[in-house]
Image 1 (cartoon, one colour):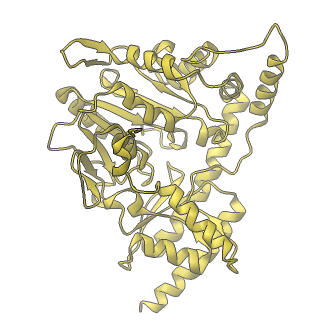
Image 2 (cartoon, rainbow, N blue to C red; image 1 turned 180 degrees about the vertical axis):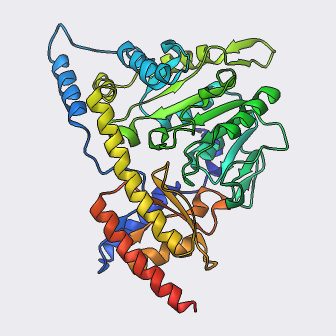
Image 3 (cartoon, rainbow, N blue to C red; image 1 turned 135 degrees about the vertical axis):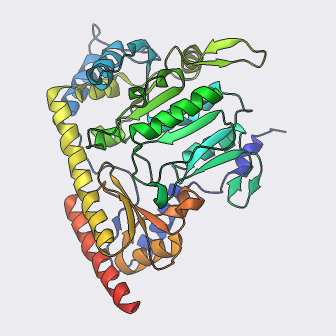
Length: 416
């Protein structure tokens, strides 16, 4: 008899975005008269920058030449990419880290799941509510969830994020070991200011906790007083792992490349009390289970740090923020509760009609041909909200705004 991981029984039967995709597939099969515009998914419409394409073409050519051919690369990533990340993402911002603590991967989502390999199943986990569903699902698979009670797991601490506190997570009353923070947050679009991050670094130090800081959307932050890295906070290197991605900044959703920073001063303990560097554990895990991101994708990522590449990142993120800001204004003008759309590509909109998240989702899909993401899919505190994505073309976004605007206007008149 083949035994399987019982923890999979504790997961929702379908992952949130897979469920949305199935609903949309059915919508297309029914041949609705309204062409579908997707505002639900965080995928980029492309294209990648010319400098990235040129670098990747050159990398392919390298593989056709015996003298420049690359086979297995270093599991931690090629030094050319780790060095330029250190220089451009950290040193230029006054953050002192060593390139040896940067680990190149095939994307932030993979790292978020794989980090569980180096952490005990007995660790107590805290997540923002609402938040990216993979944080919870990853820990359910690893066995840190406890019992499912209603829509929540008994062993997971949910950090409520409400409009009243700008969707900043509340410090837990209890001691937790692993804290997932995402800034700019997916889905709410809120960005944690330095004073908020200082509270979390202080809490982590006092409680010997680990912060897993997901900053996949840091390139969208435009207000210069908002931190792009948790390492801008004094002492954060002692308590935090930072995870980043090239997916939403360079159009790498299909290319797959990202990185994690695991400082050497960050330590944990074996069950017998022996102290160990998390950096060494992560390195051991990666060398065992990962053969490294492809040479081609890493050369493409390197090109994003050239003058042309950085210009392309700014132009791409500007386009998506522009879309999101127009979506935000649409709902704000209609009297909805709205965040995001300024330093984030996502818009988080709460309806004033008392409709559930799925009721809004279904109504916009049926009446407007617009797909959104139900807020309740991101956690209990997301009920009554929907998430809209700025990751689309300007033309599609303008068409979506026109359709939704008509629906909002009609709904407003009906409610009188």
